[in-house]
Image (cartoon, rainbow, N blue to C red):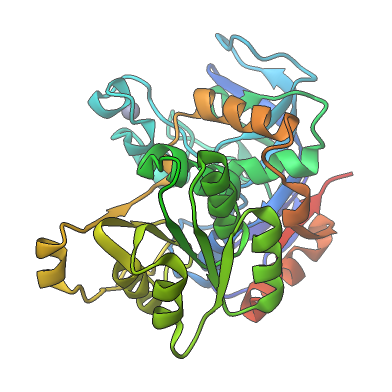
Length: 362
Ligand SMILES: [Zn+2]
Ligand SMILES: [Zn+2]
């Protein structure tokens, strides 16, 4: 089976044949159907966020189950699954409190292993690490809790997007922020995550919904997906945002992970407002804060990790919204490519003009 392997930061991924061991207890073997290419993959390749290498990246996938390991219930060969990139133990204090996104037992996964501290990928004697689900591979083995069965009627290239951008964006609105009908929302950055925040805000009944980006075509799409007003970023954007939202938003979502736009999000909120940080900033990033205003206007800044997801609940909820037509995924797909073009797909992030590129497996 073929996979794209990262050996060294800043180098192209190497597409090559790997061996794949069968699933152990609590795991499933999957045949990949599609994988979105996410900004975090690009950061992983560049070494902005450092993984252990060699590793198979890719964390926004859909697949078909091929084989289930011992003790796996509720999944069978042939099932269509959305892939979550969040392994969780289900039994630590944070999982038990209903917050698997904060699971405290992820050390093995953080180091590129599966739960038992070993890998299923290898090339000869060389063990290759996982970035669950490692969707830049034709086949993979993942924890069964990260493969969520979905209606086979939904196209699998669309199901892939649920795995990162859509869960992150919609979850930030519905789970983290718990936006209520009539509350105002600003969304800074209208890539795959930002467009999903906008759709989540529409589903929540937010108004107005103000989309901010530097690329006019992304603002056009934002309007089609639920934004009630758009603001072109850059010089003077803060004033235009405050005008559009009527003086300060209940919620300002930042989906880029950049210091300037995170600061802008904190300034776009009004009294009692909350800036929700969704984008992944570089580890060294530090953001200046208007500390006094935070106090006397009772403003909040919060992070949102993977949309504060509870995967078995939320992936079904998202699939239901897709089936009912409330959540539109097809417009998020910019272009489709094969695994052989993965380096080209990653390079598109440098240009910043593209929507989601999706790798489709034959
Ligand atoms: Zn991602
Ligand atoms: Zn846990």
